[in-house]
Image (cartoon, rainbow, N blue to C red; front, side, top):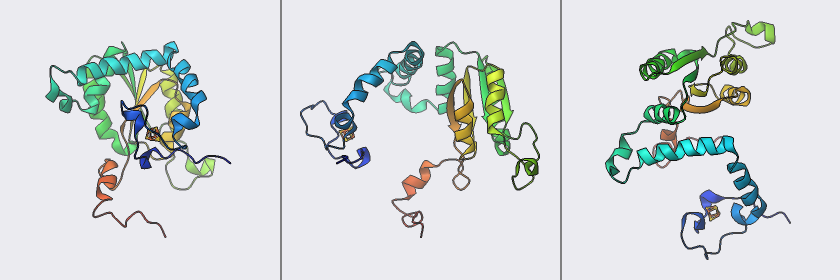
Amino acid sequence: MERQSPQCVKCTILRCGSPEKNRKVPASCPTEKYPDLVRETIDKFMLPENQAINQGWLALMNKVVDPEKPREKFSWTRVDEIIEYAKIRGMKRIGIATCYALMSESRSLSDILERNGFDVVSVSCLCGEVNPQDVGMPGDIFCNPIMQAEVLNREKTELNIMVGLCLGHDILFLRHCKAETTPLVVKDRALGHNPVAALYLNQGFFRDRFTRG
Ligand code: SF4
């Protein structure tokens, strides 16, 4: 019988984060269920293209979590981290894939990146100006996240930043862009693009909100 699917968020053993490696974990623990993937993923991890990213992360973390400056880790915004990561990696050309509705925020981001010496390419989701009726879509605007990705591919950006792409369009963008890509703004129309607030409020005011009938 197929063993249960991993349920890490319900695990009370938490051996993976503990130095006590003799703790008995549930059979559904991914470490137990997929031992072949431990080796396989380490092999992938060691590939040069993945090592470059991980070394970038490590160098960034050494700055963010500097034991000499313990309070400074709370002063790193995500914008700071993206700038630092790109500098560490020696990246010069940054792409911004923006939602048309967040053009003002993306303009601020572009200014900040340019002030930091980066060459910035920004592409709106409405690029291509396709008539929605021509592709069987309703409404009077057509977002083209695939073109957004392909434009940044042609422009040879080294790091792409997603700003507020709609759910689904972000998936298409990620599926088609070639450069390393990180989100800065995740669209949440109700919560000022701060989706984690829904999870905080789920313990209180939002307790019954997400139960769909
Ligand atoms: S990886 Fe294993 S030990 Fe860690 S939380 Fe998941 S089930 Fe628990």
